[in-house]
Length: 311
Image (cartoon, rainbow, N blue to C red):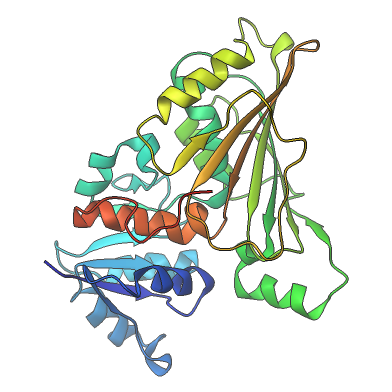
């Protein structure tokens, strides 16, 4: 059975990458509006109510409007915006965390943010296993390619070649904090330090853990074992071995689209310090790849279909 998929916001970075991933798929008939109709409310309403699945690649306000335009009980929605990530009635589109059957059966799916994807992938399994406390003051250091900021930020980097690093979120109220705290079930929101560098795509998310200061904290081997067990059935997420760790981690300007994620546990046994690091593509598992993974589950095909997930 072929599903009709309407991409609302198909001209943006996330929408374009979803279209690319679906281009050769015969399970889906992809519908996008012509440029002169993209902001036509009537045309959008018609498309939203005459598709099997709508993928919203829009700013928050426009995403909420699109949802309000759906007048039937059959159109399923995958929203890539921030608008519905912690809203009641919406499932969080992170199959490894919430369960694949949950996504397959959902009618409303909120795509995770790119930074929360890395953070939650590292921390949630350890908190669920009660290896780490919910009330610890976690910190998150993260760096992303500039495509995570959409077309406006892409244009800024293109116009000003002197920008090498852009730290932001300095007001400490980043919109991703709510979903980080909610889905990791933390007592306090983490202290989040995001930055963007002069690379189109790619992302590292780090959670430092001073294990010597955390009551009853496990050792790095136990941390790695729990992560490895948690993702044992996930083709998309790989946990790197503790032995022979890389001496450095790199982001390359010519990185190709990638829909997987690799988790690292770096440690120093003498100090009891650990650095948990997630490597992913902010446009892959952090955005478009995640949306297609959820779409695959809705369609009843293998979740990796059409995705690039090997390192």
